[in-house]
Amino acid sequence: MNILITGGAGFIGSNLVWYFVKKYPSYRVVNLDKLTYAGNLENLEGLKGARNYVFVKGDICDREMVGQLVRDQGIDTIVNLAAESHVDRSIMGAAEFIQTNVGGTNVLLEIAKDLGIQRYVQISTDEVYGSLGPNGYFTETTPLHPNSPYAASKASADLLVFAYQHTFGVPAVVTRCSNNYGPYQFPEKLIPLMIANASNDKQLPVYGDGMNVRDWLHVRDHCAAIDAVLHRGRIGQIYNIGGNNEKHNLELVRLLLRHLGKSESLITFVKDRLGHDRRYAIDSSKIQQELGWTPSYTFEQGIEETVKWYLANRPWWERIISGEYREYYRKMYG
Ligand code: NAD
Ligand code: TYD
Image (tube, rainbow, N blue to C red; front, side, top):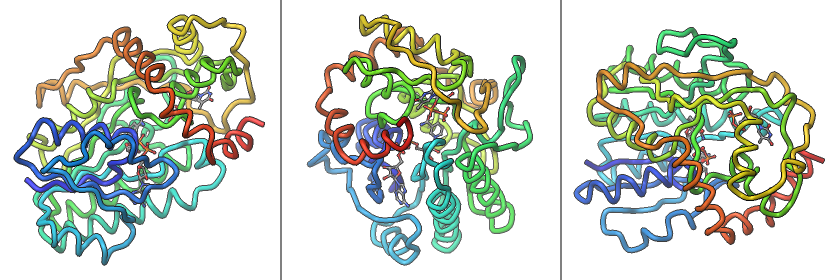
């Protein structure tokens, strides 16, 4: 298999590149990434010299370049993770979200159609379903109700994927996963942001009342789920992926503080995110029953390991938060 992984220098993408390069030495993994603020080749330094791995810098919106790459590398499989991924940034400005998440997906689908790609996996998100009340779960048949510009761009991309599958027979599958955590997550997202701030005795900005609920899944469990869908998922299907680990934000932040040995007095309640989704929760029985996937990490083990990783890899995130991130942080948190 010759796999094109897009967005492979980001958080989930770099974990997935590692996963495939190590698990399938006979596959060739081509990582195409634009290296936006969120892309970081340090995540992949350990793969330098691997025979079955190639990195290419480029934009998924560039049809000519991507088409040429697919031909040159004999790509037969595409896993699309390239995206603008942060809800707060999509609220500040949505243009790049539409361009990459919608326009870029369309380019990849055109290429999949024209060049006879044998399998296309679109990495989507549970955020396309909108927000839940205190009860119930998202299933694959829950109607789309995206609330943020980010979620709307991902839902739009999903609709394009289904249209290309239906109309042109592009052999596509869509996965919709809950919130990931683990190594190499950019420190704009809740868990690494709180670990970095607490480590530096900075305040921890909790939005609103801190009672919004997310379902957390370790990134390596997400990679295993993508592996299952890539090899055994049925064309035209959606697979929800979740950790069955619902936590409200305050509970999670307190847990991180306990692991870090820091005081809860660091917690500061700040203005709520606009349109903030209250609760996400995933019913992953379809992927469990059909493809036999189950998460392997317990939340306790995953969080402990993750906190240890950020403590052991302080230079990795210190380099990020001392760069252009400072300007983002100032704009976002004042
Ligand atoms: P990330 O922001 O860490 O990484 C995104 C990567 O995409 C970066 O390396 C960036 O350089 C690259 N990229 C952006 N625009 C590009 C373009 N035009 N061309 C090529 N590369 C480009 O994101 P992530 O958290 O790793 O998320 C990856 C995917 O998984 C996204 O599609 C996201 O919607 C989805 N997802 C994320 C989560 C989560 O909890 N993080 C959950 C469910 C689904
Ligand atoms: P985030 O990691 O941005 O993921 P998403 O919004 O895609 O679920 O945020 C997770 C939750 O944490 C969400 O309810 C918003 C909240 N949050 C804060 O309270 N403070 C913060 O500084 C951030 C980044 C997030």
